[in-house]
Length: 40
Length: 230
Image (cartoon, rainbow over all chains, first blue to last red; front, side, top):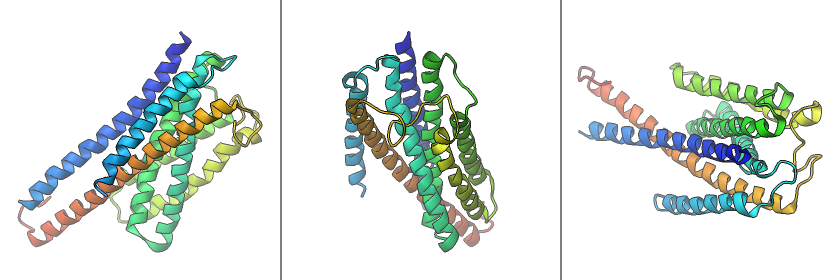
């Protein structure tokens, strides 16, 4: 059971980091679309 | 620079996997807490990196207040944002570790409470930057960042100044640590530092691009005021 806490801590760490990275990637793709529109 | 980023990304991923292996397999099991003590290898580096990023935020904010340099403003924003992410990891992994060891998720002792207050200060900094449209926002944010940074040493030294539930630091404090555990801690700290650097770099590029696009939109609306510019 104690290992459950260990894996929960490691999992939640990576969930937080991956969620943040996903927001950065989404904002990059939204900006790329905006740049394409500006070029038109 | 564009070729360097993927190379560093792959090297950092390898280092993070190696650090995870060290933390879960190589590091010795602590005698009283057992395997749950391995949370230490994610909990402590997250706090140290968060503090380091807030320190850089402090330097960049001071530089911005003196020189009004836009690059310093971007560095301040980026380090505050990534620092909040790392401090969030610290604040979430702490209670998960505390529950099986102390029998409670949270206690309002000085270290835990001051860390939460520090986190709230930098979250309010990010809210200010996100929702204020005033031209003075970077200036106000820089002033807030300078005040926020003053709390960092207080959080760090709170375990010396007050009697707390939180243990003494294992490095430079009253505690001691097995050299093999220290080795694994340093590997994880290095891996997460490289990761934080790459995340900051990406976020800096994103912010710079966003400001360039905003500038282009402003120019477009100046040149074509009736043209449906945003």
